[in-house]
Image 1 (cartoon, rainbow, N blue to C red):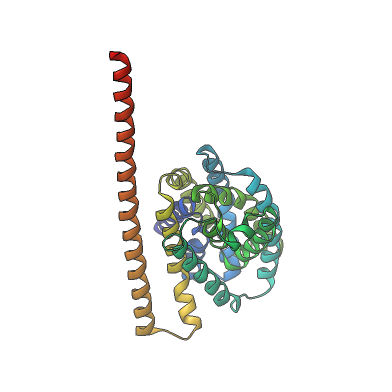
Image 2: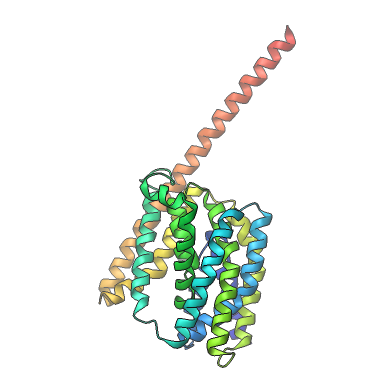
Length: 312
């Protein structure tokens, strides 16, 4: 019983991350199941089954808070479902250990790109890459790749799709997160169908699935609300940091770096990320204070003008 409660708590934490930052539920939950000794295919199948509930509630919650652009959802969801079904079928019949390091490297590059975008590269949505991702035709292939990675890696829809759009799209991060989260329901349905056809229910512990789902469903509305509260630069850097933390160990392991060397690299990057986040928080607070002073000045000027008209 205690184990199931811990899994439910992990589901709450994973969904708070996923719903507010647009990624993390699948990767976090799959990592937990793998640590418990679950086979990769069964871990991914369990997570996708749990997400049938969490992604539905998350999508509805994001819609309620105005975080969803349905034109993006329509273009992402169907290709994502196709890719997810193909990925589930592939994983059910073939090991993907060789693909994991490549996926981790890709996500690490995206993480660095996001952090740079929100610190030194100025406003997102500019440049040649932004012009490419602004084209609606780009969303289909992106969804296809994201769906395939999601099913084969036990998670990855958010890291691949949200990372790409949030680092290049002119949309607000909360709109990207809400739209990608709403698209994920159909992606999860397709993956679940693929795993059930390929594996059946044999080996899947429905109690674990239920605990993960219950925790995620409880946290989904709260997470959707958080997506609209964090300032865009802080949210973007948090997304980048999350991907960095989740994928750096796999990249270092694939490169043959372990022990003290790996700890040193992780510590240096974590310190750099925390320093960047701290500086960004200070900058955002300063900008908000300046905006508040300017707004108060405008209101005072308007009040003065009204007073003068009244006295005349």
